[in-house]
Amino acid sequence: MVSKVDFEKENKDLTKEVEKLDNENRKLNLKLAQEKAKKGVSEFRDEFNKTLATALVAAFGLVIGLSWNELIKAYFSSLNYLETIHSNLLQTLLVTLIGVIAIMIVTKILRKKKN
Image (tube, rainbow, N blue to C red; front, side, top):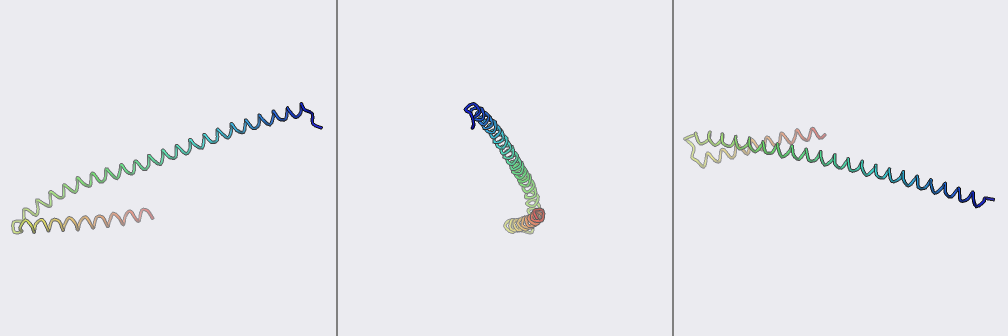
């Protein structure tokens, strides 16, 4: 038969063991939460950097495009035999053609890199 003293001692030992396991569980949950937070911050940082890089590339692309626009305008306005409307039409067609070709090339390159 189990005595009351033995039972109480075993009960105290089990209670301490449960408390110890609860503390370990809390520590593990805290560690898991910290790891998730670090991963979330890392993913946010990566996405932010990608977005920032895209914005910078777009900004420089706009500056380059505006520069080319001025050059093309100057070239077509120097052609005296073309009327202004024809000059603008040729300029627009040329810029559109170059832009579409550039977009197609970049899209193909990006698709190849993804695969």
